[in-house]
Image (cartoon, rainbow, N blue to C red; front, side):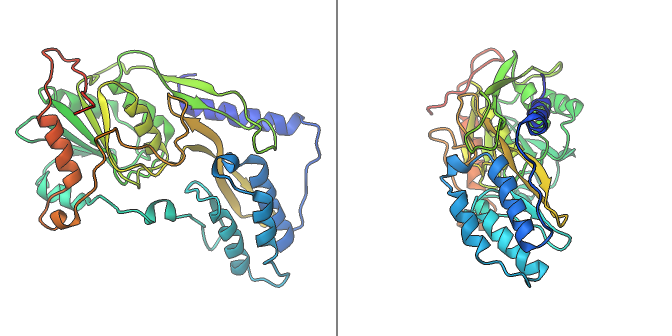
Length: 355
């Protein structure tokens, strides 16, 4: 199957097939605080995919929070108990949605420096003059030697015609910077569409598993998935992908795949992770729960739920003092690396990662 989206659908279908054909009873819960809590705990217990990875004792966690319940709790009080239990997973993909609130674990990024200021870049590097469409902005920098691209969100679809035109304008640059700082993800197919411009043959993008039963370690064998090169303009010159802690989910997946390519280095800070494909369900009161159900691995079969590290030698943070003077030290680092690259005479020069 060509697209990761289809693989995830297949995983979900396999999960539904198991649910429909397995020889086990279907639990029913009362629509009160205890029934709704037990429904939420059980849905997570049977389908969440990172209990073992994160070393979480879910039975102990459930007992501890269930002890806080009272029959006369308000909806908001009950919601807060459930949200606090889900926060124990430390997972930005896990949300409980009611009519009055949505739970969200923010510490996956809030305990880290932001390392990004789009206004600073627009003013001091782009001079408020750049091309933009579908969440992607670009300009040629540094005496025409560096192509800079900022992609704000994979919620926007990748416009291949726009990317083709952008790469043609950058054809004389030594290399390209793809800035995905503060890119919180979106559609996984967007990662495939963008990566397809940086490969010239069928390429292993990673692996995915799906749950085969309610046990915490009940998973299928890892299923490899591949990306095909685009029929269009392909960039095989050096690339630096610039990331921060707020690079999450589909953007995290994009970084992990790009890092495996020979002409690519990843700079900045460790990404925010979020490598589980999401799954949604509902508890009796009508509240929706969304969480990670299918783990996705990088091409080296490494789980990137906790983030993707920069390439060795490319770990760099933003100097907040320099930022006051209009300098993004993370972006400056990438520009300097590309400026100083020794490129080959042909268009397939590869990145020297041990600079």
